[in-house]
Image (tube, rainbow, N blue to C red; front, side, top):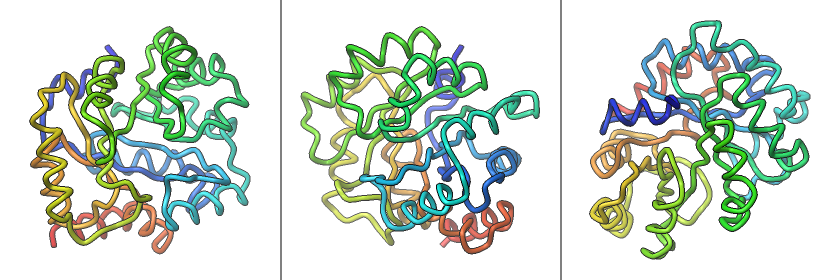
Length: 258
């Protein structure tokens, strides 16, 4: 069974995922960060594929991607770093998050074959048109048992949300706002209403809330209205400042208590 499916079958709530950008804060830090995250009890990981024009990302992740690219990180190098990751004791689900350009250049067949080879369980491609997903990407991803995760926002219609729910696997990435990524102090009333609306739609797939989670308030709001949440910018900023992944995680956990 795909590790993502297994996780959500075993756990229905209280999940926490972390995102970091491959090649940041150092070109060869990917494996160390993954192993450190797993040792600290995080439920699954999103590994970002750095790209020169990350349109859905805020300044923190854009900066991390720029530094990673300058350090020589590529999609090919990322797969090389992940080669053998499962032999190093990593058991939690791994998801690659990146934009169409580098994946398209590699080729869908090769990309998903590489995902299966190194033990990646899913992919999030924010700028992948749904029609392309249905016609070109999904058949190949299914062939290699890779879950392609789709995003919804407060502007996504109920009809579209149900269509995504019916035609994808894994979970739904529930973006907290239509803005780019970035830490926030709290979720306002409109966002909480959006969470509750989607939570009450009776969807077949679990949801994970991402974008803006950085403290106790945003963490608890997310976990109360979905299966869990995904933290990106806050963790990436701490990695940039502190470089040591364990120190960065300790600082993140401290922030989530306040």
